[in-house]
Image 1 (cartoon, rainbow, N blue to C red):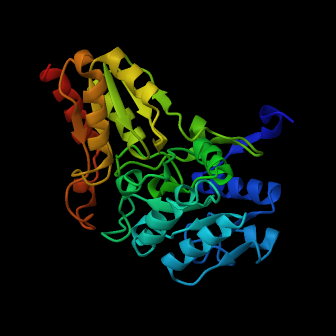
Image 2: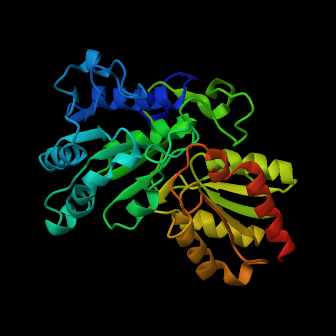
Length: 347
């Protein structure tokens, strides 16, 4: 059966439903797939991403774990080494720190230290980012920490279609995959205008998701919007902020949704920047040593003679994510549009 035939019919899904569908498809296809984490079994997860899976597949394949992130990841590494394909949930990305040693020192290095004898084919799902008034310990975007570690893949989808296809690809991959889910996007695309009604995924074309099996490559960026004046390198929630900011600024922007932060689709980045001659890097995470710094360096290194202006960077601030001043921290459309215009003034 070809991939196209296997996709089956499509229907509107939220990102939550798309992620659940991906796990459902893989639990059914592969008996080695197991899903576990804090409250993911009977309760269905804090955001209900695993709702109904335990009832369908039983408590030996979808089960709850103790409140111990280091224990959850350590168990998953052992399972992966012995042939299973665990999909584990860290309730919020902010909670991964107790498991950092297991992720960085064990999972990421298992293939290398065993000369290919063992792999750690585990997928670690983590809701990330702000926009829901989660405060300092429920709003972090730690993606740069994972891209720094050799042996890890780091993925962040921006829509339901990509979320399902990328999660299936992650589960099937033999490398450990950090799968970051922007929780502000769970129920609809968010353009940063927090004072306006929420648009549901059912009204967005990327909310139409095949019910069956399909994959999205783990190392290919997506050109979300095509333009000739400016390249925007971004991912996650900021894809939609970039879209509305470009429209409000009257700029034809190439908006590149990276999707996979590592491995990185360098061909897509370089082709776009060389076409437009201007580049803005946009992410929600902390500015200093954020992933945007790496993107700026790569563009400068490979596209210097094509640039008409310095590379601009818009990010969160170098502070904890504030609860009461969330929208001052969040890179909203106004701040992003001003940066877009600066790139033209500095030319």
